[in-house]
Length: 201
Image 1: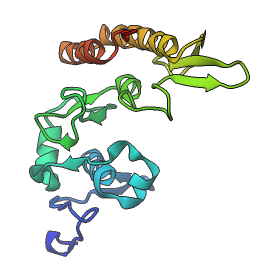
Image 2: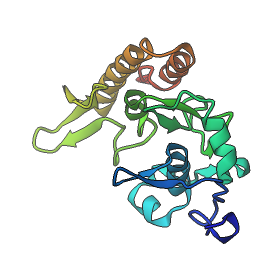
Image 3: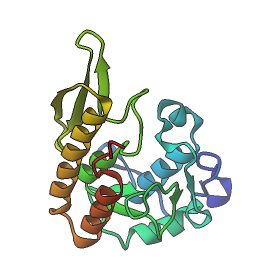
Image 4: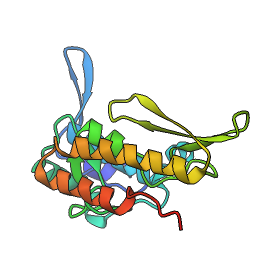
């Protein structure tokens, strides 16, 4: 279909591609990498169905330039994007806007490492749960490779939260040392700002 006859993507995006974004090669349907990344970004921000399943993207939006596919594609072509994920809040902690000055591509390990890093889990601090039978607090944290590590049981939420923070800090710093400098420094900033031990005051 011509550009003028294409519908809006997720109600806001304009697909102005001058080529077929869907192709069949050797009987297999393939979607342009650039379009797939762009459409997925719009879905996270504007799909009501998607946001019902994931509250992580509440309040997120795409800058006006990136609502036009060709603008996003031009930016992405200049990035190190192969086998990586589009990230919006590593460079700017807590950022809600998908914008060329605030986004970058990171590998899967970094992406999973920071998923939900500023979230809460129920009524207790992130990484902390309470076992009524033991009458103790428990701390657990993913180790950066997908495995969930149990960090022990504690008398207070404060102790459990600090155990989580210490472990998470070490995991993030370990991953940071394997990254290029801009990502390494961004991870160090997050650790410094959000994973210091809690004060008992």
